[in-house]
Amino acid sequence: MSSPYWNPKMETLPREDLRRLQGHRLSKLVERAYATSAFHKKLFDDAGVAPGDIKGYDDLQRIPFTTRDAWMQNQQQHPPFGEMLVAEPVDTIRYHTTSGTSGRTPLRVLDTRTDWKWISECWAYGFWGAGVRQTDRVFFAFSYGTFIGFWGAHYACEKIGCMVLPSGNMNTAQRVGLIDEIGATVVCATPTYALRLAQEARELGIDLPRGSVERLILSGEPAGSIPATKRLIEEQWGAQAYDTAGMTEIGTIMMFESENQPGGTHIIEDHFIEEVIDPETKEPVDYGRQGERVVTSFGRSAIPLIRYRTRDLVVKAPHTMSDCGRTWDLYDGGIRGRVDDMLLIRGTNVYPRAIESIVREYPAVDEFQIYLWTKDGIRDEIAVRCEIRSGYEDQWNAVARQMQADLSTNTEGLGFHIERVESGSLPRFELKAKRVLDERVVKGER
Image 1 (cartoon, rainbow, N blue to C red):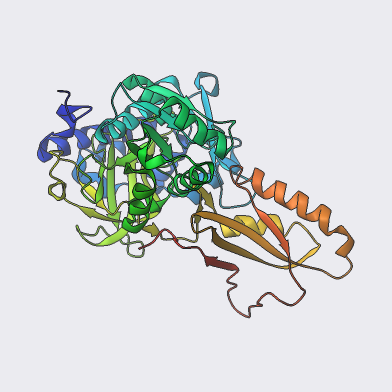
Image 2 (image 1 turned 135 degrees about the vertical axis):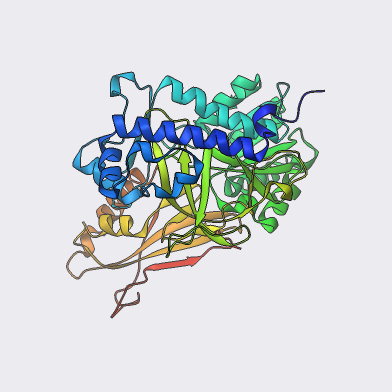
């Protein structure tokens, strides 16, 4: 019988030994970042922190935070990759982006061969922890673009020895057909798309609950840990669903749900330090209290990531919440929401202010609204509703086509609906504008 752990030593390491390991890796990470990253050297110098000040885990809170805005600003000042990148571009093998906060400028990351070995290793923790083994046939309902998504998961499954079934160029019906034809036992998708696949299967007369799929690995949306959504997915597939969460900034997952499904996601604590802080006071919060995730990553060599404020809302729980034997803490309920105004649409980050910066480039648009809804009760959709300025009516069709293309290009290929509405029909604001109307069934919060 195989071990339930991908890395038994690390996954069951006593907490005191884990803290010593994290402290050692933290001090080495700070030393390397200070010596090689102009971004971090300035950050530490401005905070009056020297590498020698960070001797272990207890010195963590002396280190200044890294923010997304500062990272993006640095990339704009030092295009295209900024000063956080410590590897020479010629030594990197992979380019990925995630939607930025300022319209047309994405956040860009590069990785080396070493980084991708690490990225797949972290995903292997999650797949193995969910019960995936060499005998499985793993189907990826994923586009394989520059959005990092399930890229690392693909390579993790190859590392485990699974048969991998990519579907980047397929439509939904073709994907469902291949899952049924090949007898896939594991399907990887966002929660929203897992429901869409189930809907398509019903329309095609394919009985998923009686089919071959035993597990679904979910990622990209908070809904993977929302009990009602998870139950619906499991009922429609006749399979167990397991939540994971990652970020382009990190490159991989940093948490996963184990096979015993304890109601939360284990943090991969030999590769990450995950803190939870009060987003206003920036002070740490205790187990059981909701706060903002702050992550420090030990594995990505090309981009040191230290005390990065993710803006994700979480509730940390001790490892004893799960009876699987892992000594790693958990996030009760996974990712629960956001501190900022970012929207998550079918696994894609969408910033309303970034949409506005693009829409406002079109003089034909007088006023606009961002509208979100759930189509057929399962698929999140996003539309930009526009009032047309007088005198521009004849230009509307061309404007709508170009705006749709611009928005899609700058949000990882997400499809937008562009709708014309009557003049004067959208709300006006005297103070802070609220141009997002969110009528989705699930908004990423409990």
